[in-house]
Image (cartoon, rainbow, N blue to C red; front, side, top):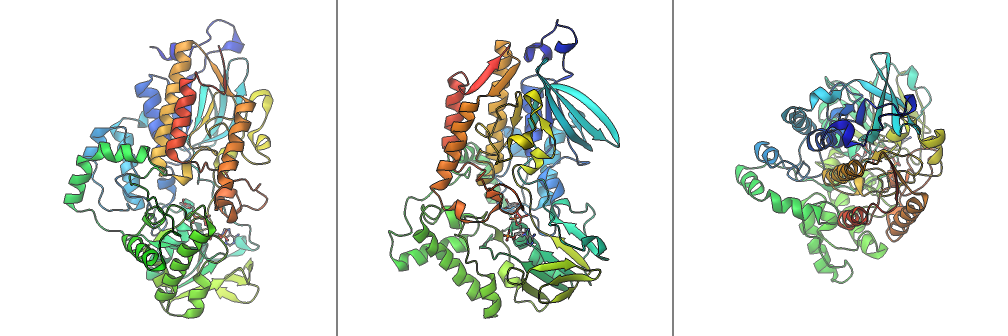
Amino acid sequence: MSASQSTGGRDNKGPSAQQPELDALIVGAGFSGLYMLYRARDVLGLRARVYETADGVGGTWYWNRYPGARCDSESFYYSFSFSEELEQEWQWTSKYPAQPEILRYLEHVADRFELRPDIQLETRVTRATFDEDSHCWEVRSERAGRVEIIRARFLITAVGCLSAANIPKINGLESFRGDWYHTGGWPEEGVDFSRKRVGLIGTGSTGIQATPVIAAQADQLTVFQRTANFSVPARNAPLVPEEVREIKANYREIRRMARESFGGFPYQGVERSALEVDEAERQAIYEKVWADGGFKFMWGSFNDLLINQEANDTAADFVRGKIREVVKDPRVAALLSPNDHPFGSKRPPIDTDYFETFNRDNVLLVDIKSSPIVEITQTGLRTESAEYELDAIVFATGFDAMTGSLLKMDIRGAHGQRLEDKWEAGPKSYLGLQVAGFPNLFTITGPGSPSVLSNMPVSIEQHVEWISDFIAYLAAKGLTRVEATVEAEEAWVDHVRDVASLTLFPKANSWYLGANIPGKKRVFMPYVGGVLPYRERCDEIARNSYEGFALAP
Ligand code: NA7
């Protein structure tokens, strides 16, 4: 099947029906973009290309090189499942892989499947416009100061959910004489904090990972905390040969379990409420999962922590108790104890010695909720009540999650509608895969899909495979235009909201809701209905001749 046949090329109608240079333009070279390219090019035989802003592949794992950057999911399931050879030949070295190891893995994937010739690095998409005459996307990009324009039948975004850095606007930053960094754009050569007084703003997963590592290196670390966060010990450890053998022998079953689970993790969830056991048993269960470490504290303890406030309180109390046990200064322990959101309603960090770090003499915790930051000065940072001398500032302040990286591309759909306008009141999407009014655009792990609430590679593979199957279906039928209907989109958006409202998630000011970005509409963006039900719904839609999509020749 030739490429032009494969997407039903319209071949004879003059300039308005001009053939696109590409069948698929994929934006982003992280997990999603690499696999999408492989499927589009090597499985479907399409003319496909990846554009990537960075000068290397890796996406999130290219950019997030901050000290302590590590995956919160275990290596053996935070990885691709599509190639058994890849599974068998790659050696993970630790339970929770550090950033350099994941980056090496993704570089290996790019090399192994010879993806690099079709990946154009240092290329930033600056506008994408749908051309109704040719049913193509006209994509404008910049590379080394030069503007390029290319036409593609399908535009597939693989831009990640946490890629648009949130650097808070704080007066005086430009006057700061020291160095400052955002964790999501860390210098490739690293940063040496020895003999430095470092200020770190933000106590999400990133700040919690970075704090112990920076504290061990710097002269002084001051952590500026706006909201105290729950965190569970990771209990990271090297993988021993026996474990590796066991994992490699059981990969098919591991992958099946992950795909058929709620969150994309290859573990059985538990079927018991935190309220159906007595206090002694509950504490014993929490102690066990706390000792095991990681996300197991959430899914391996009780099944109602995210839907029942009373159940949740038992987990929150347990974690607060642990913070008091670990942190020697009761005043600091109290400040580190979250009290304004349910456990797990913000993305739960997992850590290595986070709370312990506040027992160090060179670490200071500053509460910027009661005394907010006023300005950054030439020599440090000033809050309402004190001034701090700093040589370097680290912004661990997160991302304009889920929508930020999509909106940055200035996507314009049918009739010139801008995605930014369409999403003014919050993102709307059918299945998190397509947006009504934006034909031939597919959004891998877009808002409205499980994405950030799941083990990402599982959700990424599901999306990539579903999109590939859809494109193959369109090609087989000679169709060149596909668009989610407004009705299907509205129904899905309602469903996403309704399911979220059954949970405790909306009670937190989290980035899931856009609450971290001033002015962003408060809408719960990911789909909380679970990886398996979501997959089943997507598959059912495909079986029903892609109901909810309008298809045209
Ligand atoms: P997060 O989870 O969004 O955390 C950002 C942190 O920065 C959080 O503590 C915020 O406090 C704080 N923050 C954000 N803006 C400000 C301002 N303006 N002033 C002070 N403090 C601020 O980002 P991460 O990078 O840690 O993690 C992102 C995801 O990456 C993570 O969930 C994993 O999925 C991987 P707040 O809580 O909003 O009061």
